[in-house]
Length: 279
View 1 (cartoon, helix red, strand yellow):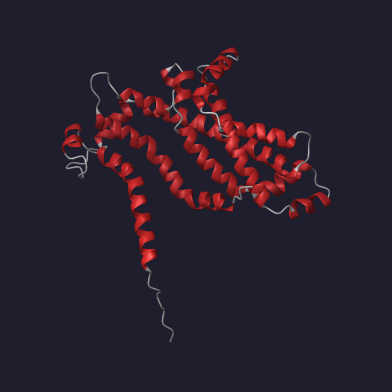
View 2 (tube, one colour; view 1 turned 45 degrees about the horizontal axis):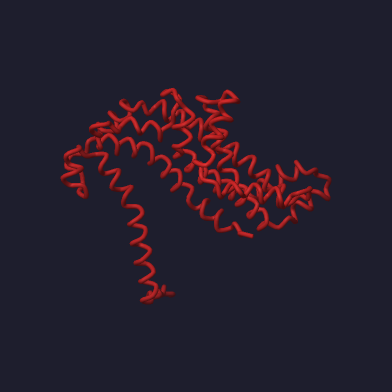
């Protein structure tokens, strides 16, 4: 009869565990506090900010949903996010394959120019981008958010996808080429299935970034019925007073679905980032 043996932790391991637990609690507690505050009244938020709600006010969510017209904003955010992420990850994967596997003139220069996008903050291009979208007739349309959102995430996505391609041995691709497959067939049938974990990682990360984008949505969209969730949250802030209970309820409605998506796919995200070798 075999007995299982358990190894006791050393003081150093306990210290690391304690530090990690404190950091996780410090980062996650604001989200918990936001959700709990969504169930309180304004008076209760200020009197007992760190206590559990005395009465769980589910009506806050109903009122926030109706007052902020979050249903329309949700559909707009879903349309913009899904379209921008699809364009970004699709084009980035193809570009990363080209930079990692193909030889063509000015390949290294083109890649380095593309990476300049990592250095530019959004406010630096807001005015030129506004002018360009105006001249193209795209202002106040979903494309005014879809195209900039996809383009703004392209540099980081190409960078990580190219690193993942470099970490994958090209044996299967070379075998497919020997069998007579062309470049497109190799990319679509061989390479894409191999880098799917990295693509899923970038889908999740880009979804979070584009879902929460605010600056471009404020500048490029005028009609209320075409705006996205981050802009819609501004409706809950009054000039003289603010209903914080509804603010926290709206924030919870906006944030929790993205958190659920991340927690469901976190293993794939971590696996994709871990497997990516930065070259």
